[in-house]
Length: 330
DNA sequence: TCCACTATCACTTTTGAAGCGC
DNA sequence: AGCGCTTCAAAAGTGATAGTGG
Image (cartoon, rainbow, N blue to C red; front, side):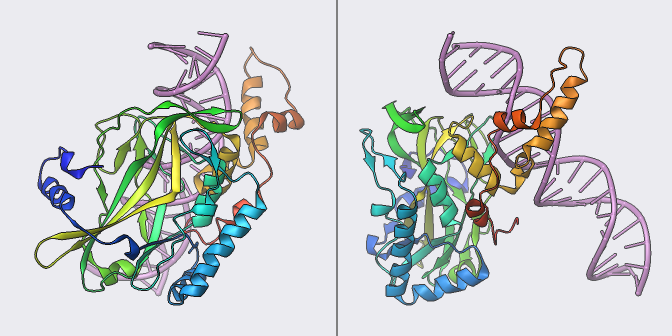
């Protein structure tokens, strides 16, 4: 996104203009870690790993290998429709450690599990929250420097997509993007030490398909591919801004108004606490069918086996539910 | 006829006010 | 009066589904 083109009023406009003339840091100082930091224990381990680059890289590689070997269906599509490996060439498991600003994505495993299936995010008129939402920890910034953390959603492809034969296929050129304002974390600005002391969460961000919505609501086109970009903005002494951008490929998703891939639906139900009501559909559907039977127009008996067939439910996948461990919700 | 989209439903979790005891 | 804890209702969030409209 060209920040110079944003038409925003007020002080934030000036800020964005200043952002557009930032001093970019070199690429080799950027590092996105997708090591999952779901629990205090793993978080501690992750940070210690960062101080020893070789073991940190080992963890990245081990995870990449274990994930790809465990599921042969791991793939995504290039714009020409050809398949490519996601983890094999991911830029999220990066090389530079010493002196780097490191962004560690929380729930990276869950994000990759969705990515493997083809992440879908529901968008609607009023704005739907993202799940998984973006949460990360930050290391390697100047402890006394003043920083802003900015959330943005950018196009991940020049194509629009269609769900065919249980796969997302590129079918045509994407539409022009809506003008979305980058969303500054409410705690900005803060010194680097404060940012590094805690997890940084954007759980309140919403996705909409109607333009003209409020702050923190991003208007997207359905059936187009996007990804999240985090910008770390440093306020320099001479009133300039320097920016490090983290496009996070693990967050790549397709915006939809209703889910297309039933595997994605099942994974959302099993990992999102708000969807717990859908984990035991027999009870739920029995209640519904009882209500229906009480109406004179429908007295058809529905047994449990029939309910199972009708439902997208499968018994809770222990592997998938395991990702929820350590979440603040669980 | 197809399919993207919307409104509504039942369900769970979160939130915050009220009440209570110390 | 102030604090901490519990309770409970309202609000918010979820996917499913039937209906609508282009």
